[in-house]
Image (cartoon, rainbow, N blue to C red; front, top):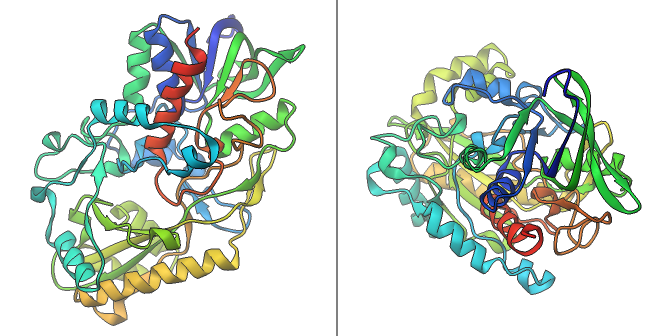
Length: 434
């Protein structure tokens, strides 16, 4: 959008191009509808570059709650799917049981199209197999997990999943954005939507600030899909002061240990794991930060910690992701308060304890066992179903919908990408097709 074209229009404006926004835009474009996607970030290229991932990340990977818990949010076309690891977990049963939201037909559509499958045997390296054997010896059903990854395109190693689509092997929301554009949808980047405009209880458009200054776009419908942290401030500025109250982040901790053999850095991250502790609120998978993230964390520990980087090729890692409760708030200026409760810390400690036992059984040096501080995996629940939106994802203004992780009405404690895609498909099919 140029400086001379600050006032435009579209039937449907989709704010955000992550899994929710991209799926909605593609679905509407395939139905011949007029769709405009507004993305706050840029279209960063090339994929597969850790430098570019730092550029995509909100505040260059230093985003944190005011309490100090680090969170990761990518501002780029495709959103945080550029850095997620392709894990494909089905929606929780409580969406149907408690809220009457039946995603089964849309989940089947996703499965037929994206074909989530477990990591194949050929991509299980020495580290992954050692952790699996140790976990099973500890009594856990540790096995390869399903992913939105075409394993035939991975080669002998599926590299840099943290930094893009791994050469097209991993599904990211960029794929749907491009399919939406092929169907006629328009994409504008570096467009920061600030508020939704309305009149007489009906949507009339959006306002924000773009590359060339303030803009205003007329629209019959607006779908907010700016993410668990991005949608709430827009809602607040649009007349929904209760938006943003209560945040969930699925806190995770990585526990590391070293042994003489090959470590986890050569394996598919989050390739194998167990759901045996899910009822407690914990899922566990093998994982290690990519070396730039790992080194960055060591730098925070001083010269002695940095010296430990030489052990990176021999480091095994286990991620424990926990199910937290609603706490804190996303404020109108985008800052986040997210205190970790005693229950949260108890679950985190439990995950670290189990991870440490498995690593010790895997042969790691007891003196080498160390855990990272808790970090937020995927912020959500800030514009909840039953609170700010109804079960059709419509807010209190006709023509305003929300479709991203912010609508989750309960903590999931696991990656939500398949749930968000299914919600978006349902929204298109049942509410937006006319």
